[in-house]
Image 1: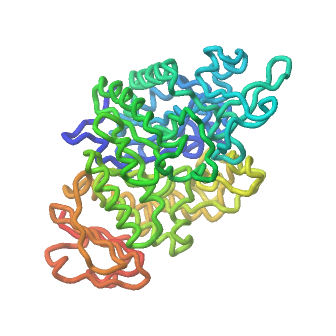
Image 2: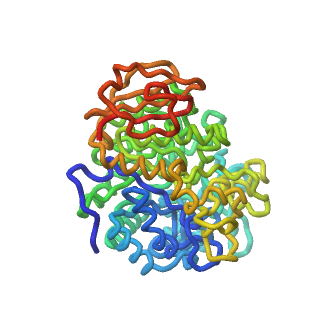
Image 3: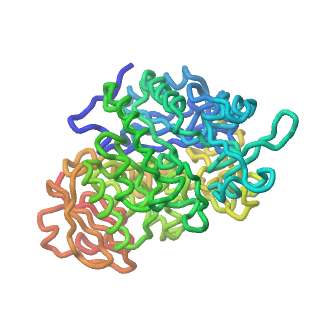
Length: 537
């Protein structure tokens, strides 16, 4: 199986990776759900966009209680999406297009339909089958109360009780997410051995790396103390949290790194480790552990020059101390799309365009969530009856959940399904009628479109020796302006403020405007919510 040409610098240090949310990318058979054949049919688009790799959200067999993050079999493909042969073909064809393939790995929990958990339910307390998961006796008379006060990320308690064959109430099991997602016990050697085997299964098939779901959640404080209001259930984990960011997770990743290092071709891991500080994050990417980690501090930073610069500085400093590159991200399948976060409408779009050039100019790598290159906003008015996120279901609609950023992509045409599936098919989530003006087809020939901006930015990023891995040096221009140099000869200026900003002529005397996120008043006067790249090609 061929692989893309490797550079002297490991590819993952500066890669732009495109997140493919499989069920919402492209539907080849008209069932309303995206699939592997659909992705294969769009590899040319991804190559032309200019990204280096794709990351696939889970495609494993699953009851889909949480959109595939409840895995029933880690070594196969759900028939909704295709077959193992389809994945093999996708990897081979992606490599022919110069694209690497990263897949999601979900090690914190399995599906309750996984053979291991079915065996655990059928086994008696204390049996080895139960030791793969976290079972505990309840508190109070008859053990009728949960073992502690931990809560599920999706709402409600983090414990569910099972009953024996004669319907007698029994032990409780931990699920930090949905009840259909029981947490594994990573103190169990059998669990560790199984996942190292799963890694090898996919690496042997040519997979280039893994994105690790809930990478900060595998280890739990064995005392299982109550949170007692001291720690939040969700959001960035603070140090000392009893079920997030425990030190023991690093033992797992050191073992995984030994597995990946035994394969040729710079195989890589990226951690979804939602922790409170960049210094906590840096622990996951020490030289003998994982390679990169999502930068939630940057993603969560408001549209404010001081906040963005602080997130950038803290990330570069903390990760640099352990020799790891930063990876920048603006949106993903779990957060509100950044066009909407940045204000929505024309303002949010202008800010999103500027943010794209900021992200692509920063040192390290970047992630592009499908549809952000089209400027898609969050769909906030989905009918309740169509929503599928367990957060919405478990909070009785109090929290709308993540469906609004997962609506299937608009590829072409003037009405749904907008080329997502065959004419007449109905996507699993409804697409807004106004997306008729945001399709790939409609934007491809428009020099002012978001798609053209991304294509041009990604092409220039490859052409410019200053961009990718490396360092930056800030240039102070004004409190609402972010400006930094990268060598050789590159300057990025982002006006985050609400008024035009003037750039000193001496800063750009020997430079030309390479790319802008929007029209300029002049080469040295930048409108609000606008980014400019200066330099020489």
